[in-house]
Length: 252
Image 1 (tube, rainbow, N blue to C red):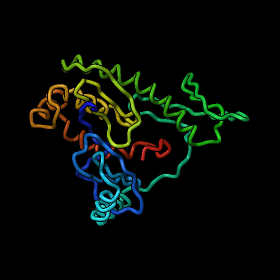
Image 2: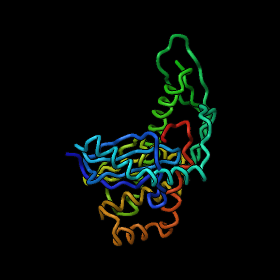
Image 3: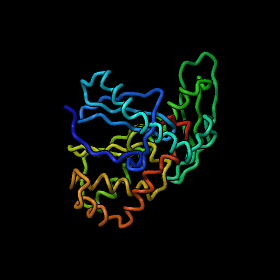
Image 4: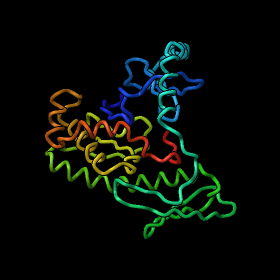
């Protein structure tokens, strides 16, 4: 049985407006109690379902909510214009105040892409003609950067708040910025590297506070407010922070 956890959504679910979809993906979850639909800024639609849900039930649920999905996608389209997919020459990481130059070195007959980072330059070598392999290599590098940066900050905030945790996992996630399991594991989205430092700090405090309250009760928010008085405005900003994640990363 998977351990229970609380997740801080990647998007503010209250502001996600419904909309239909010609196609959708299905994600089965052992924690899901009912069917739900997520519409993402770039139009992707995901249906989260309890295990053992039939394909017929999923299709019926999507059809029943088609108008809601359409409205959501239309709403995102009004406020968001997707950028063209172009591999980056520069990667800006506001969370750690770094700007990295990316260089591509193709190699004949290569079947993978390696990375090397030195003095502010990320060099990708190998089958760099494959955008997919290049993105995966950059994701691996970003995961290491995030682990080093966020582990240090989380440890410092744990001391400040007096709230312990067991370990940190860094993941490439599509649906949430972070989560904390009942066993004390804090999972963080590597995409946090593209956010402002104050948003990352708030997210880390948020997840630490779940060590005292595994819910979003009034007591939980009072605890968060004791360490971050501006949590309301920061939480709102975090709900819209997906705009800061570059398209090439392939999150949406």
